[in-house]
Image (cartoon, rainbow, N blue to C red):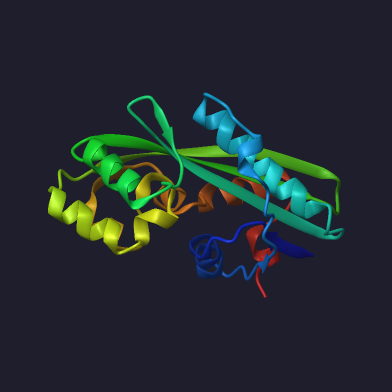
Amino acid sequence: MEFVLASASPARRRLLQSIGINPIVHVSNFDESQIDHADPAHLVEALAEAKAQTVAKHRRDAVILGCDSVLHVQGEILGKPDSPAEAIARWQAMRGHYGLLYTGHALVDQTQGQSIIRHGVTKVHFAAIDDATITAYVNSGEPLQCAGCFALEGKGGLFIEKIEGCHSNVIGLSLPLLRQMLAHLGYGVAQLWP
């Protein structure tokens, strides 16, 4: 059985590799602007499913994993920032506060004709960093590639005070949730090891 990651995210690929799964990467190139929901849980689930289903059209005997993450802060859903100025403004609003990081997970099992969709939520507490630090972090380029303007596994980890919930969910893929979803489809994680 092939295990396919329908994502261009190197962080998601590294997470899978860290647990012994070497996925085939097949980027969906799904146009995310087609889906809009006011509820962050519904949004990430719909986006994850759309990405997995898009790739499933090209993969017959495979299990396809699609994921999508957003940060929900003070009633606003935040994906990747559109510009450095937007990233700076977001960090100025987030500092000293917390946000909820939602990651949608969709597994499409082409071998059994089944799918399962779930989401994980992790509470992320942001440090009260000064404007100069925010500007330097945004100028590093890292926050421009990430939902919520930070990468926990990179420089952004310096500015996270506390996490409540699944750590890997914040990186873009909840490993415990993936294990549960695979089990629901009848697979043990060890079946995906070389």
